[in-house]
Length: 582
Image 1 (tube, rainbow, N blue to C red):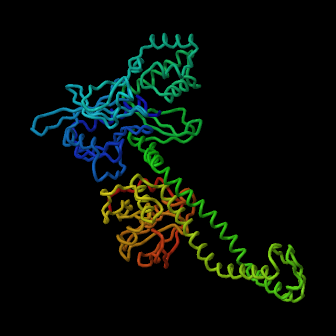
Image 2 (cartoon, rainbow, N blue to C red):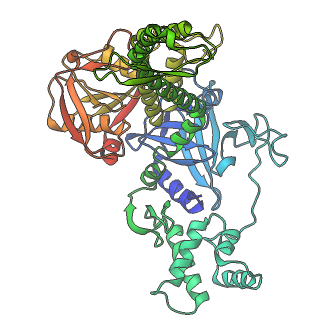
Image 3 (tube, one colour):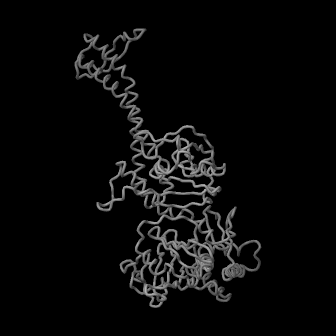
């Protein structure tokens, strides 16, 4: 993974800025992430500690998190032992992806106590552990490892802390030239690939860094024999790491995969992005990846359900169009029946068809009428009259069903689009909406029902002119923002004829910059996110209304003007935003 020992060293070096800082508040927005709100060096910062199995990381963050109404047990424990505490020290274990954060706090009796938060950034084995450093006993871990899971070490309250298994590798920051060459020669004799040898020999060096060392060693500017060039490339990188000369960077490699590191990478193809801090780099790199990954796991059943519902309605639409085509031929069945009644003497039971003169046709042309050989002539005529009456009466029903089916498909498309931008909390609101609409059963146990006046999540952005922009990312939020929060003279925006978010500018007066930014939000949080020149309608809230009996989130409006917007992800990400309960 990209987060190796070098990136960890860069993070720990950056975190020295919060030594002596106070932990004001601790939150646990989900089952694997901890957010520390800190007061350090005269300012407030947020530090994210993540044991996400796919995207584990530690860095300062500007991201907004929605916290559960009831804090998880591990969060409560951290609050008890660390909230209000002073960060005494932050260290890295060798070049491993393990960070120790030592905290000094006064306990309930007023005595000074010390606790240590250990963050192990190790892929699916990542963990955040709170322990008593004097005894080495764990108070708890964000992820429990029981004896049945691991025979090597247990992560449970009351157990002695055991470090992850040692890999018996060399510390690259202390490697000497002679030892380097000796190990390298042994690898050559064993026919081990150089890249594999670097990763297997030195602690904290990822395949990415190994590849960078080899590329630098083989570059045209490099001089001397091959072994000497390899040592020089290795040594130059380690000198920068040892002296904390970090220059975070990200870009694409030869396989068009986004990569990042705390040191400059010559293997980046084309345009590179440079950052002033490793936290900025990691926040940009991971972006919404971690949340999207968590959402993807939580949303699979909903996604499958909505796709199935949509498919069913598309098939129903095909059948309705077939019925409509048949119903539009109802007059033909009436003509068949009347011609048969007028010519009963020419038809015999057992005939499969009969050719008669069509006296309804100006040219009196012949017409062939299919017959049921099991019916007598009169019953065949009656059969056509019944068909005529059936289809004539069904035309109104088919039109009504067509409208309902189109509404269902539009509704499913809308929900599918919302899932594409949904946070964990948004998903639960979408699920709740489907329960309210009768599509899903309520999974909430009796006695644990939500309060009726629970308000949906609010996504609040701030324009460059300092004006609040409300964004609804599901139907419950859209209805709340549009129908309850917004004033009649606030401005409402939505993509024209495209599923997307309701956006409200909460001001009667604003400049072009605010309108442009609100339209950007409407276009970005829509099905046309990847398109250009997306039409976005803007009108006053008083011109927006919900038709009686309409699906959640559906509105009609008038007096609009249309802006054409090309979604700009960078602009949207730069807008200050926060998440709060309505």
